[in-house]
Length: 370
Image (tube, rainbow, N blue to C red; front, side, top):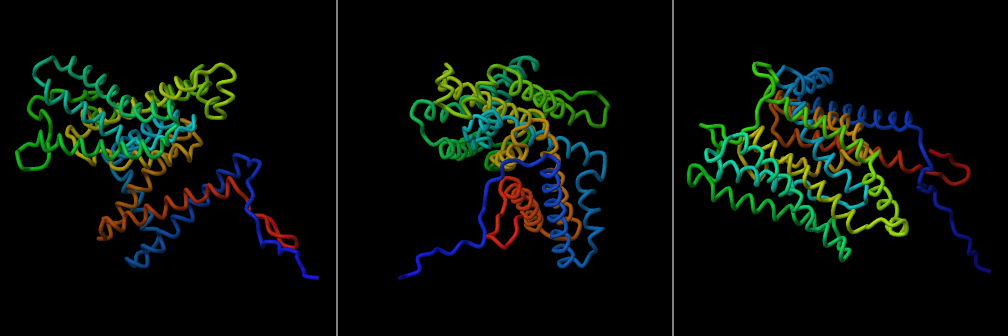
């Protein structure tokens, strides 16, 4: 008689029922420490420097001067705003991967207003027009795939991702159309002589006045998004749709309306980021103005478990590590690729630790559990 007994696998991967907040924080902290140690070892091998100087260089990159500190917080604000924009859609299980394109389209709308209306209307009116144009452009750009999802259940991940490429090519087209000087392939500083459409600085003479507007807007939207998701009727509808579309329909929620409305809000906030980048920070438009933060923000939102308050710290961590890695590469005479390698290692550890928070490894009898 043949032996049909199956061999039991050495281990199983099992989803955890729950994990305490302290233990989850501990795992994430351990992952960050491990990432920093590995980055220090790699940099030490390449440069011959000791790890202490490497960590010191990372801190200098983010907070080494008053200006660097303000730039770090401004970068945190931009990343945070995009993450906040994506969060309502994500919480509804609408996977909006199009934040990058929605930011670009919002910036394109702001640049168009600055170029076509600058000097023709009062500056206050121009900024107001830019504000509504950017929000509307970002919202419409995001709502196109939302309508297809709501009506015909198309794959929103693919459609929002593809919209990024269309947005990039649109910006590239108008960059050539508006290039200054002709043949340069770039727009240059828009309205440099008149500052028409430039967002105002807050606190004249204050060292951080040129950065403060973005930071304040980020804090206000963080508080507003927390209240919106946690305490509003629309926030409740988003949660129910995210849990179960059938349940949402059963309790009388108009799912299609919720999807379109929520994704429009998501895109509109991304459009606002485009306005801040073009009208408040760079005063120009390029295809790379978002700097890939539309994709990094996806990770921020997930790491924070869609909690706007935790996103503040997640954004700060990622920006600090990224700027620190860049300073290490510059300070030790290495190219930007080395900075990208360090940043990639750090992000890999941060993302990878989520596996051990969500799952556990159960070994066969006679073994042990982890």
